[in-house]
Image (cartoon, rainbow, N blue to C red; front, top):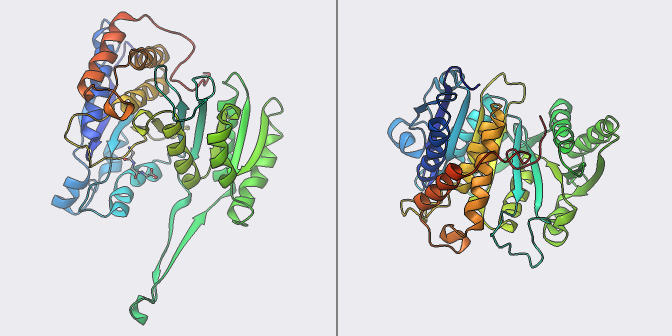
Length: 375
Ligand code: GGG
């Protein structure tokens, strides 16, 4: 990718704190390009999609959005959601439209306690809080199948059906992805999470698929857990976790819990991958638009900057991704953090600190984008 044409990135800052944190991620990318002696450059096209756009146009993204985005190398996204637009409208109209439209079926969410950050867990250390949540990202509970019926029978009589979609192909590809990812970590272990005792169709199919796939990875330890027990285990025995694979909804909830245990939702990064590369992948902080702090300049930009590192990693710019992660670690180690982590820095000051560390640090090999994946 380097030394050739510019890397073309579609930027969707979105709502609330999205634009504030995305701006810091772009500064980091710009810094890397400027320091590369023209070996690497980025070309951004900004898209004003989100709730403001919805209020003006009656839709969250343009009608030809997917056709337009398809021509980019990657998508860098901030956050979605704003009071005045129902959350299900904004989420389905933007994030889910892109994830599902581009078959970004693997959502990778590293959970790591960064140096200098305090976990709410008494025994939480960077050694004990270090795992990856692999979220199935196009089906499961987010399939969008169902509807509201019988409302015409009168007040209080409506019935809503919301079906989960579990295809064997969908289960298999995300489970295999988790195994492949586990092979790049020091301890090779995959934990599959379902609620198959209660969800006797889709999640039993998931379990059966898992059991079949396990046979192809004899070098990887495996286990199956129910999601309720797993929530407790995140808190009580985090050191036992490596790669946790789960359905769309369960992994979403568990990864929020994980990032809270790692200090703040503001730190959490994610990659929505189309691993076949038929479509661009999308990189976004896990957090939402945080209307309560939007516009105050205090949002934590680290989740967004780390997501930019995941983007670099996905494009094969692994040394650059590692450098960004090292600069993030140096920043948190120095205590240069926003109020969600007990600090006094503004969003921009944290961005400044990451840039300063980037300027002074050589490449740190080995950690890649922060979840130990190889190759
Ligand atoms: N940056 C991610 C974002 O804005 N997420 C909003 C949200 O509500 N996401 C729900 C989900 O991903 O399931």
